[in-house]
Length: 335
Image (cartoon, rainbow, N blue to C red; front, side):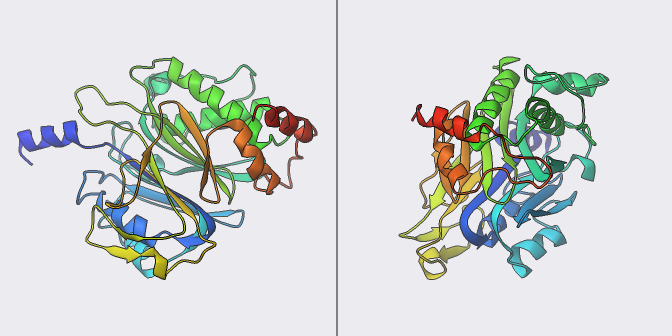
């Protein structure tokens, strides 16, 4: 690339991108993932690695690679030869801005907490955690309940530091499994704390999973200095009546009416819309959405429905909160 072309890429194209899917019935991610992979080196410059995590029951399969998604044999295998079905999936393509091009820095990141697999992928810059890059022993503590630093970054990205900080804060606050409304309330508070450190420079867009059913999506969008690109999150919900769709990044079409049933519903979350002829909704600044069975829940009290379906945190290691019924009554009064 010439110096001018390189400058244009850096000031007009997103640095990392996210893809998430949350489904009512087990669904393969081939169509969306094919288009997403093109942004890893063909239609965009995110060629410093990619990763994907999806749930099968309480287990998680995670694939990460430092190759560009557009040329990675592993990505090709997942998007063409191996159409896996899942209820919950997150993926990330990387353009390295913090941390080296190394597997330890490729999203999604994964940790066990409370006997549950948690996965996390992020796009943005988080000044609150920049000090960790400058030799501090620990990342800043989040929340008003102090505890132990149980989770530590393996790599050197601010993204992984944020993930570990969120888990440490949740582990310190709760000794029993919180309900989804309480978790929504707590995550919202922790995100506000991160953003308030520097509202102008912080860009915090993430996907967070804590089991096979639900996916947390948060957006504090923004543009990096010198860039004219807005880093945010969008989502669309595919449900009956299904329609034909065309990818933006690849000449591939599908008629979902021919391959779905009336029980199907899929929420697709992406940094930039993946298709040309679907309605994509841009998330509001500071919005936290819980997706369950492809349905977006934007307020804590709306998460009661997910909890009552049995889609809350499930573990054989940690008991559920004895205040669960009281919590649900409190949030029902806010509806």
